[in-house]
Image 1 (tube, each protein chain N blue to C red):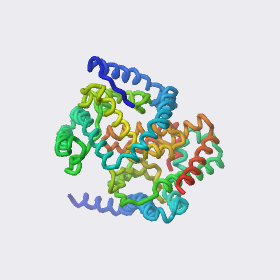
Image 2 (cartoon, rainbow over the protein chains, first blue to last red; image 1 turned 90 degrees about the vertical axis):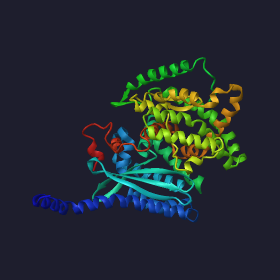
Image 3 (cartoon, each protein chain N blue to C red; image 1 turned 180 degrees about the horizontal axis):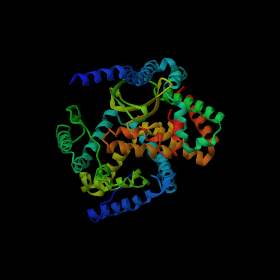
Image 4 (cartoon, rainbow over the protein chains, first blue to last red; image 1 turned 30 degrees about the horizontal axis):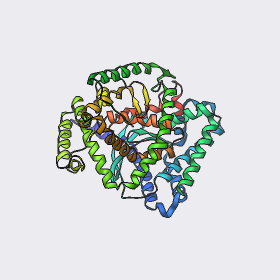
Length: 202
Length: 259
């Protein structure tokens, strides 16, 4: 490497160093915080009960996931039919539904651990973090997180478990329910699911 | 609920299934909002889903729940291993047909080890020896060969399929040694396999029940994505992960969802 190339390389590192460090640490930290909280809740699952798990997870779901972006995607073309107040209410409902699902499903601990496998930058500044949930008595489950940065913070915008993407599932379901029962019907169905999870788990 | 009978000639059934796959494959040219609709037969499929769901709730789930209560887990694991091993010849065939020679040889070793040291497949000793279990089938082979997915089909008694994966019924049948035993002896064994499979899926179906607001759409999406995941051997290309944030949106809309 000649002097000019070396100078350019050093200059590049100096210019990009802080940004690179931010990009690598930020998204991974968001996923790690979420995993650590899940593990903590799983380990104290019985003591906390459904309500306790819900209360502990709720701030992490709201801080770690970009709910407005996610609801935009899962509602698809139907979002244009909603006014601002309906969108805000739906964001809140979606957040409650997501927290309820995690609180209901992660209801015990059997030696599970989360392991980060890789980080990969994608187009438009998004980052893909592939992780694995390892279980002593079962096959590992791959959990792939897609994240993006908004106002200096990294948010999870989609999760895929063994290749099955949560946004695609919800978008397909919501479209089918809206088509048959309208938007109010969708809201009723989601509220009913949240109530079922509360009563089934408590 | 797979009540298989031997066809008159091996190739007649295969030909019928391939023809069905090709015909239903054509239907995927239907589009919704500019995107290919993977489920052009949704009305019929939903009827078939309701039919299967009725039989499942009223017959299979109660029997499977009693089976789980009556048969200890190690015995059920042995039964699962036994049938998985018999069905593994299909995996071996499709590992080779997809050009995965190393994996195919490992799969042959796995089958031989489990069939011998593993007491006819009852004990999965191969996994402990580092011989990984793979999931391959005719649908994945056709995908590797460049055949389109075709229409989504919900088949009575059998459940979700893509048109591309229907020929796997024939492939699984002809590679399973039990298919060459008289049907009379086969029926109770087929039923045990079916019951054991259903018992293994009880937790998954409870999850679908709990998590979904439209189980039909939930199962379709999960199945189609799981198929894609298998075709890529559990390592789908990274580019596909953010497709959902741009697909189907008019050119001026992405700014709504991309900060």
